[in-house]
Image 1: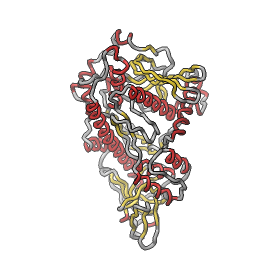
Image 2: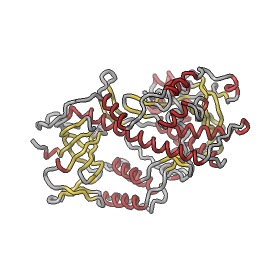
Image 3: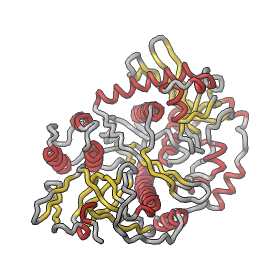
Image 4: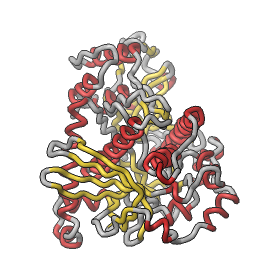
Length: 522
C-alpha cells in the first residue's frame, strides 16, 4: 500500500497522451492491421444468416440438450459450449466449438485475412479480431437461444475421470444460457439463493460439471501437469473517459478451472484421433527444458533454501513438486515466474514433441477457431478425416501445414508482446498520479542495470535502476541470482520484499521509475 503523506517532492511527467492514443501507438509499433480488408468484409456480409437445409440435415442435432457457454463478463465472441450427461457411473462430455470452417473456406478472402492475422489481439479497451465481427460476434458466436453450427468432441470418461472413448462430428446446438465465471461461482460455490433460484434448472448440470472437472484435474496432477496459477492483472477502465481506474488480481475460480479442464480434454482427444489416422497435423508442443536452464533454476532454489532436487530436465513431476513446495510462501510468485522462464515457449509444429507443461503426450488447439487460425486448420483436418465418404478429406501437404504452424507461432509471439506492452501502458497510466508515494513490492527480476519490482497489490511492475540506489554501488551476480552492494554487501534477491517510492512515470515509454523508499532524494 502507498503512503499518502509522503513529504518528498518527486518529479512527475505530465500526462501527454490518452490511454487510447497509447494503445494506438502499440498497434502501430507492432504493425497490426486495425480493420479487415475490403474483400474479407464484403465476403462476410454476403454470408447467409441461416444454414441451407442440406447442411442442417447432415449434422447431429444437439439443440434439445442443455448446453451452456461460460466466459468472462466482457466476452463477445462465444466459441465454446459444454454439456454433460451421466451414463451409469460414467460421464459423457460434449465440447461443442463454433464451426468456423463452414463459413471460412481455404483460399477465400476471409481465409487469407485470418491467416495473415493468425490470432485475435486483445487490449484493455478493444479487440482486433481475427475474423470480421459479422462472423466473430454474430454467425459463429454461440449466443443463447440461437441455433448455431458447431463441431463437437464427445468424450466418455470412467468414474475416475479417465477417457474411455471419443467421437467427433458436426452438430447443431442452441445454447441454453450465456453464463459467466462469476455467476457459476455464485451458483455452485457461494450457493447464492437468488442466483440458484434464477438458474435452478442448470444447477444439476453445473454441479456434475464441477465434479468431473475435479477428477480431470486430479488425473493431470498425477501425471505431472503443471499449474502455475500465476495471477493475471485485471485492468479496470472508466468507459466514459478511457482512464485506468484500477489494477487488481483477476479472479480465477472453479468455473475458470472447469472450462480449462474441459478444453484440455477436448484438445487431447482430437490430437490423439488425428495422430492415430497418421494425417498431417498442427500440434501444440512444449518441449522439455534445457539441462542448462534446469541447472540454473536448481541453483536458484538452493539459494532460496527450497529442498527440491531436479533431474536433468526429464519429467514434469519434479517441477510440480516445486510449485507445491512454494505454495503460500512469499516466494511463490517469483519462483513460479522463474520456472516458467526456465521452460521453453510453446509453439505450433507438425512434429508431435508432446506438451511438457501439461504432461501430455499428444496435444493440439481445437477449441478457439474464432480467435486462433491453428484451431481453424485443425477443424479442417478433422473434418477431412471424419467425412471421407463425402470426399472432403484434408489433402494439404505436411510442408504446407508446417508453414501454417510456423506463421501461427510467429504471430502468437507478436500478439503476446503487444498485449504485454498494453499492460505496461495501463500500469503507467494507473501510477501516474502516485509519484512520491511509497509502496510495498516484491523483486520480480534482476538485470545488470537494476531490479524489476512488482508493486503490490496492483500487479504493476516498475524499474529500480542502480543509478537510483545511491547508498552503494550495486552489482548483479547472475549465477547467484543476487544483486550485491560493493561496500555494504547488502543483498537483494528474487522474491524479496522491498519498499520503494515512485520517482517518475513516463506514459509514452510505458515505464515506472522507482527508488528505494529509505533513500529518496530531496
